[in-house]
Image (cartoon, rainbow, N blue to C red):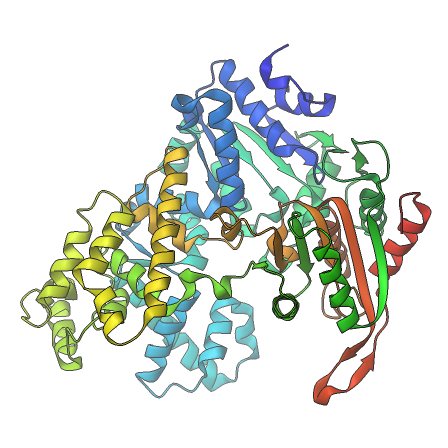
Length: 613
């Protein structure tokens, strides 16, 4: 037997070996889709298909890295290193770096995230008497349909602000993160020779988590129109409709085959969870009307016994019981999965008060989100893109007074007149010269981590923090350097670049799951269910499954069911679902609440199962 099919079940083997040019692999939770994808790539490679002709697109960077590791292990570093295996956004960056010159984008462009956009919008609004608030302007940029909610005078102000922001993006050689896919698609449509070249280069395209693709990502696939397309997904796990994901796409393909040219292969054998856990998942999801037909079947016989569906008198009782359960085996791989970010914060604080160390997976607390760390990162970006005036304004006086407001105004004027970067103008300012020299040296370093050390030493940032008593900032810098060193180690394992440019892409596309990859081995983790997508844990708690909370009042009920399904199927051996009869409201008043339909369905499924409550 060929090594790539060893250990595969019949459905997996069919998916790995089929000769179909259009394949939809409907892969249920825990059914070994990554193993199957890797086996298919190994099979193609053994049949003389070069890895450089393959393109694998994933929903999260963590999933892409894991897939690439398996591919390298499967077909060897020499071949495995040739395959692009990353997110749609990362591929958009690559395309704009390679071909952006055709539409006037230099390949050293900066990516602006939400916080950059907010800072620039704020400066624009402050510069004139615009009759719109910053939150409203940001809301409309993120969701253009919200412009209809504005008054006429607000709409006029917004359009001026948006126009000025777009002008600054062009002048700063920057692209807004939310526009990356749109910008790439626009380039591909206006330059048809690029898709033609890509079609010749990438003859085999793989798309993971297809149910989560946005309209823009699906449009890219239509523009590319690859010779061979293998998509993997599960409509049961489509939980991003609020982010423009369209579960109907995968449902329509499944229902329209074979007339639409797709071969559909279902993976239904679950290798992750016990039968008792899967009975709850199956019972919940079958209530949905918009779905494909499949049922998760446990590979391991037996229903399992360590599951509970419990109702408590108060939320305090509920959380205390979770703490007590955790303490029975504090080193066990455990996740508390929450419906909202507020629940994450509340539970994290409760566990801390009970002396339980837990890793809270949240962008809010990440070192990369701290302002003084963002200044360091923007300085690295400025060394690569000297046109980035936003990065310059963030950093020029961050570690000393290197330019007065008047100096910056005059430099901006000269920059416009001479059509050269402000940084270049500042070379001739004695007060600014040290800052400029340090920034320009950074690009000469061999890696992002070396450049960061050069910046910290060159600007004497540690000494400055010591002098003004900001020890916490030095601790954050140590955390940043450790993070960068770990990132470099992972990049080298995947045969990827460790340059400043590569690091900046990673920072801008850094997803919430990266906290797990970054080396924190704390066994207890607290996160939202959206953050847990694609992960698995030995023991899982789903708290506060109350009416109006989960499912939420405002949420689409079918998507809420899919979200609960995702939460349940993260559990391998032990699942605890709970709610409380009372909760504290404003002014310390208690209000009564009911168990939700999800709780009642879970309770019923557990009672019917011999391994239930």
